[in-house]
Image 1 (cartoon, rainbow, N blue to C red):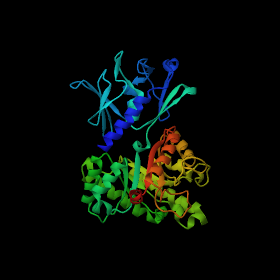
Image 2 (image 1 turned 60 degrees about the horizontal axis):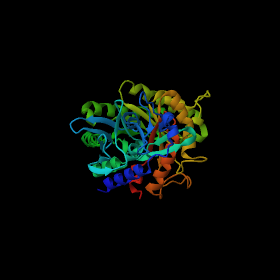
Image 3 (image 1 turned 135 degrees about the horizontal axis):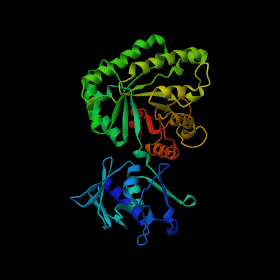
Length: 410
């Protein structure tokens, strides 16, 4: 009921505000979603003279927001679906059905030259997006709410899925987590993983098999790397698709070793050899390969070259999770500034970057972790970062380190 009331309040506010876009601009109005312009092949956005609402083609804006739109012929309704939320509209009516409840607003869906037109603010705010009118650019900018942005989190204690499997999945679902990085303990029965992965996937959450430690940068530990990859391959081959891991997730972090400051060239070369091994061992297995890396890795060069280590890794693997541990989005040494270099590299190479933040207590200074801060504060900073990062094609959302600390936040 509270969720429904929230939707009703948001939508009613959005409808009462209406559109502040002058009619003179309507014919050339531009619409952007997350920094990318929406193309309208035929019918263009316009301002309805009777309601002063900005009307847009439903299909193109809703799909940019990540929603789907369908025509329900038996009910004579247009249905918009986003995650677990549903909005139903009928042509000409001034109300909608939002998650089963009736909400009245100032304008309804219209059919114009065969194209369904809907109030822009209704659709965007119903999906918790931010809407901003930019008069100098004659543009409406819609920013997806960070609560709906893909998120990942690390579960380092595998016993969590034994003790509190349902609770863990429930928390992840509430926080809109789309991927869990689950550390693999090969002493645990595969059936435990099978049950957890299956349950998570039923809730729309992918699970990646997580492993790694700084010592995996040593060539002498290649057998351990092979063993981990082999275990996941055997496991995936033994279960149905609904219970398979979606990827392999490596957290190696060789810079934590004492040798890093003494002779990181030798250590880098050993790490690179092991990364080549991972590339070879995982070739053709259809699993996404993800690496956790520090935000400053782009400043480290491949030995004997001017090529960055981050670009070198991006060439070989699907995704990097940048451990961008700052608790402020904007300004010097903030989340956005520290992420940009690798986001540019990944965009050029057509790979993905996930931006990770910290919630564990840190000894590295007061601006590193969201520890002791509220979930609301973290969401506010992530929203500010998201609004700046959507311009990069490589940007693939956030990750929160780690599950236990995030769960403990107020």
